[in-house]
Image 1 (tube, rainbow, N blue to C red):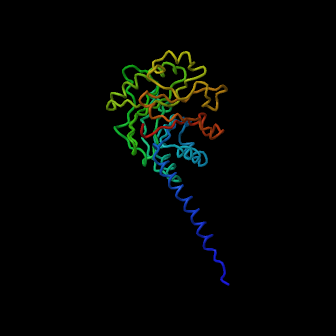
Image 2: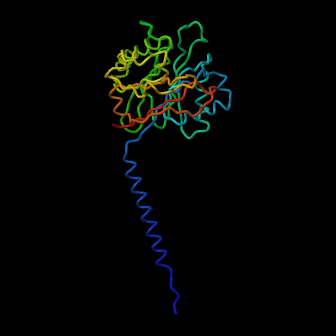
Image 3: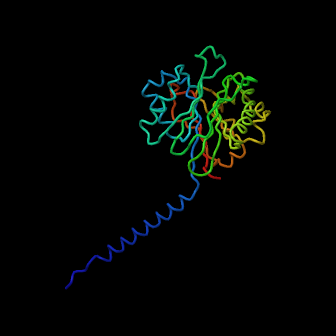
Amino acid sequence: MKRRENIPVITRNKVWMLCILLLMISFSKTYSQHPATFRICTFNIQNFGQTKLHDSARVRELAGIVRKYDIVAVQEISDVSGEVPGAFRDIINREGRKSYQVVCSKRTGEQPDDKSSQEQYAFYYDTTMFSILNMPVLYNDSAFDYFAREPFTARFKSKTGNFTFVLVTIHTTPAKAVEEIGSLDDVVKWATKGYDNETDIIVMGDFNASCSYASPAKLDQLAIRGSNYFWIVPDDTKTNLSAKSDCAYDRFVLTLPAKSYYTGHWGVDRCFNAKTISDHWPVWAEFKVEK
């Protein structure tokens, strides 16, 4: 009598495996048709100078935070030598899979003769996803002196999709927060003309736009809070570790054309509780590369 073969069982198992594989391939193809997304982050790294740069534990934590995002606007770089932005980029790339580049402003502040009072802005961006269009520049504030630290601007292009956009980052002076935030409307108009009539503009940074510095009632009187703009972070959001109340100091503001690329997803990355890292948490917003 012939022994029964188990070929039908093997065949049946193979059929099931093949079906599962086909379903996975089908799902993968369907999913890949959705527009790609990326995340932009604003991060005030409190008093970011040589001390934090050479503290291996703190700087590695900071580098890990940056690697979570595709573009990061950093405020409050305080290093007089100007070495920190490039050195920090090298640390970011040392342990990460992404290839980041940095563009940074010159040092800016109320007292140009006192270098210790000045700060520097920087945009860290993933070069596999973005390229820089035009030369990044500080807003020219010489005629009106709107700002203690002039906003820094740069125009980016996604390497997939069709999204070009201007980023504007600012760190306002708390005592003049309302006035400086109000002047951002002029910066947007200036950037639109200066960057080839670009209408997709994202303004972000440490606005100090909350609590005792800037009440919602005062902000609502400003053109930058009008119908031509969309504010992402609600007024009652806590973005600062030091504030006792829920103070939304760190903000994202979009022009309406830029809003069409916004996915509706944003967040405060409360990834640390040590004020030795910073007194601000990173705040991020997500965008599509195509409408």
